[in-house]
Length: 232
Image (cartoon, rainbow, N blue to C red):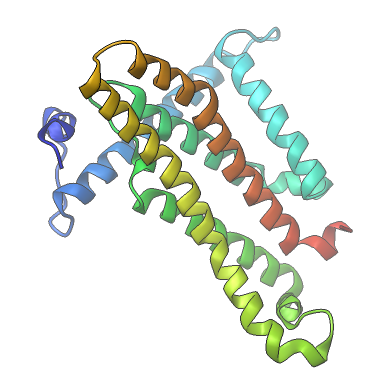
């Protein structure tokens, strides 16, 4: 780990937990910074609500309408109950990923442990929702469409299920990590020009797409977990 990557940690005098390595402490540090930014932004919006939205309020209202629309379409009308989870994931992925574009800072989503933690949270949650709504019938989909094929379908379905959090983790991690690595390499090759262009590409294309895809797949998994309840 390069020395400059610890500058922010030292400047803030953040305590390092004894059971965490410096690398792990760095990930926790930037994760808390991302969450703090989200909380501050939300408090600003809440305390400055206007009848005619503008600025930051307009951004958050557009994001809210966007997520609500997809939830209603993918999960169903009752899917809005999962809005807090989905919008929280989208906001965290976006803010945490944008941190890496600020000089001297890093994206916590550029470390494998952070996307893995979010993906595992999604995995546990949608399975919990499915079991709580359907009981043991939730596991019926592991048997396949025909009972005779159950011995073959069960291991296939289990592997497919476990591949979901792995896919979510690697997709987000690889894109953010690759983007940060390319920017660093371009800064070494030329201080201006190419790095700036790549940062713009990341900020306008890569990061928004990753936030959208992660949230979209979360909604798709929730839809599968509550399919019979929502009539899908």
